[in-house]
Length: 560
Image (cartoon, rainbow, N blue to C red; front, side, top):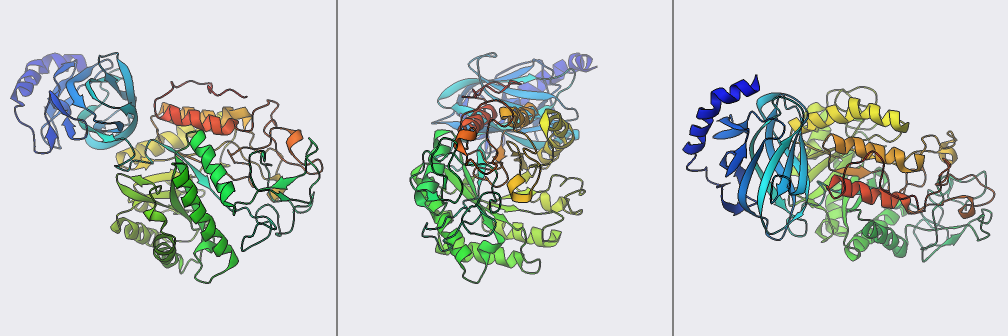
């Protein structure tokens, strides 16, 4: 049917092309132009297999696109670098992709961007995808690939400059959640106890007062604190770090730099925003400043993530507003840091817990807080329930209009499935419909990716409850997400040793844990991996999302 229509419209398309003698103000012409201006797809200098038609957004769009068709542009100037590309597309089907090729039709692959079903051939959405860091001037081909028949329409596109001046730090990048909540007796913190390492703040004691699942690899820390646990399997004393030490936070951000993790989402909890001064709040504020310092030192990014869990339902909105203005901006001046993450030139803020059925807040209250941040020029991320679209299970109904206000949406998946089959089920039943919805509503999708889960010591759950499968489980999530076109991710978590989700360096085997207390080790499923394996795996996921390595079913990360 489509090929017949191509023949019928061939002369019409040619006439429409010849008629394009001027372009609307702000749009670039064919021949030579800047990559960072909006470029009309209909202004190509050569093409194969496509046709032009009138667009509901004005002018013409390129339509009737089949697998293997292309449009080309003689000379696009990328200046000192572009890191992402935005396409204005519409489709009534699923499965099409846009490849950005440099030099020739099969030249260097700079980006691959999937086009979702937008609900109609003139129902336009913006798709943003990462590119390799393109610089200089290039002959650019947009090569269209995918299934049979009509794939999609394209109206215009533009590139965005690489990070380092324009503030595109989050889309197309990997961030990790950062708790920074561990203290130790004698660390000089306001708490001066063993917060989060133990159940009551007293020194860790075997089989009675241990709160965390993964034992950290301690070989690189400057300051360590003696516990009451038995010696490690290698005979060394069992010690632990404190997140209150600047040297500890520095080490974590050094690892982020070494392993190409863009930065951290700094957790800020309900107790952190209390109007009443207390040791916990003082400790958290001090760690927040140390995160800022470390991010600046190691050229990483960070943004504040408010976790509204257990906040007072009647005051939570005003509490966040007050804390943000009084403490985050004025006292600690976090958002003024050169390391504070920006997206589309706007400072980033995340509100985690919106719409959960066990967290505070009505739809109207959540909408008010999102609007408040947006009115101050912030880019707003929402941490939302797994079943946010349908309002069932962990999600309250009636929040869809709230979610549509968000710039970026990040559903929580930790503990929701296990194994390769579970990851594949979520691809079909959550990832794909989530991604379609967010694409149709011009929201960036930032799914949570996690290595595994267990909390035997924290809540007496099963041992190794959701196995890591020596990286296969985490990679499968990333593989599934990339295969549908997702290019942005949130890792849960960087230093969550409590629930066994940490990607930071951890004990490889029994030689690195106390000899008289159970801890999960990285060889729990029978395969030995290095303590930095999950940092290296995260690096490869970041490369995958940025088109720097090919999509493969098996992870390319060596176990050692």
